[in-house]
Length: 78
Image 1 (cartoon, rainbow, N blue to C red):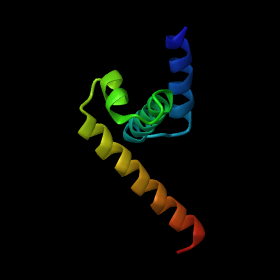
Image 2 (cartoon, rainbow, N blue to C red):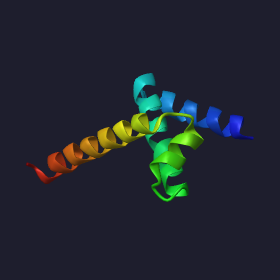
Image 3 (cartoon, rainbow, N blue to C red):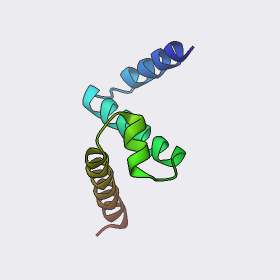
Image 4 (tube, helix red, strand yellow):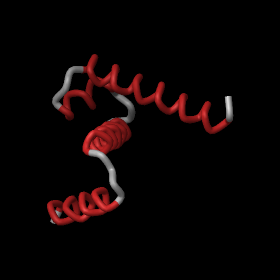
């Protein structure tokens, strides 16, 4: 079942001309955000569930925050 849903999503992304790098980055970002929510923002627990080191998770989360701030600044016209 998940395979079919993923196949449909990939088809949509290909039709929308989404590059592989963008698709992977968005998937990772969403996957990490959902895992953090599930584990109440607890980095160590989330990192363990994801199978990555806590420092790796922390760096990625910091990168996502920086990216979001840049987007907000652009949207505000600054």
